[in-house]
Length: 221
Image 1: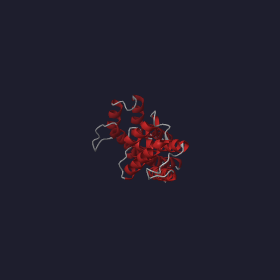
Image 2 (image 1 turned 135 degrees about the horizontal axis):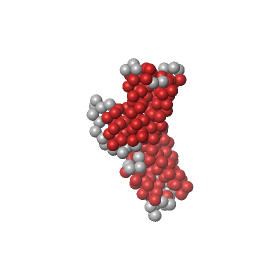
Image 3 (image 1 turned 90 degrees about the vertical axis):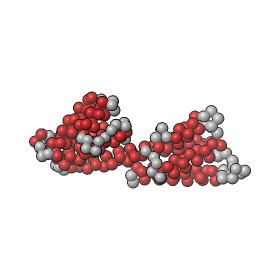
Image 4 (image 1 turned 135 degrees about the vertical axis):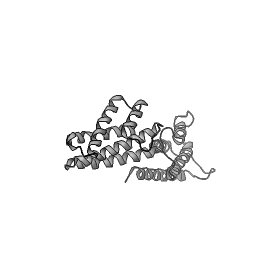
């Protein structure tokens, strides 16, 4: 099950729990509604905050509104606001199901990177370090494109790793040392793609795959 499917399942499970607690408290009738137990309120609100943060991001309206309730002097320990938390969770789930959330795109992208890098690692372990270098280089280039978009940098269609790398370092997305590492690994990828197999070793590619994985986890994970 991929990340998007797991988040969808988590939304569904938490919505179902919220409905169960609210119905036991007389919801949706305003006349019969009784405050849920404080323990139920605090547990539900905490789980909803965590889920919305992962799916929508800390800058989302859903997360900010729920956090406002969680930290408010008159709302943080008042289980009357269970319904409000439930409504925020419902809104977040609707936006998620409609594809309107953006944080999850980075999560899914990171998961795909992991899959491809695992393939590259498998190739190296089985003696196919040349195609592994090409695959890891392609993953790195795609990651740099996503980082550029995240940093609101212009990304021409024909841009290569060197240009992406220079622009990202200039914008302060990462250090000059990281820029040098990317240049070196881009050179390995270029040599693999152009048949210069004597210019790098299996150990070089093994290090490349591991480094690219750490780099993308730090910046897109």
